[in-house]
Image (cartoon, rainbow, N blue to C red; front, side):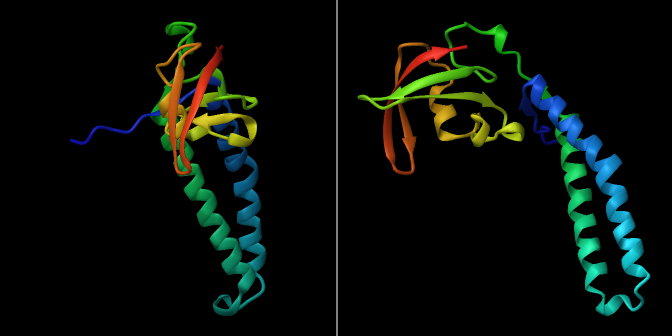
Length: 158
């Protein structure tokens, strides 16, 4: 039997997914059902674009609900306190500086399910995170990117 995929995430990420799931089930699902009901009242469903649009939205909503339920069922909560405080691991904030003299960048390394680069959260599966995990403060690391190698120095881990 194949091993089930786990979804590493922080406790905060799990709470956000649970909140999203609740919103989808309690608020969004009834709205879509109401849209379908109204669109049905327009008559002939074969040429009813409102009905088709509402059914498509319902399909996407139900798919997202299933995805979140699956991720929560197989969630693996990251305990970043269980490792060396200076070591880059999932759940920790890491600040690094591209060498020789670029501005420092800070990211939290999280599971793919909660990654949001705009909020400074990068996936543990990203090239940056893969290169940094396991390294410590003051170490220099080469990150392989599509644009070529990037040399960085880890300046802080929290």
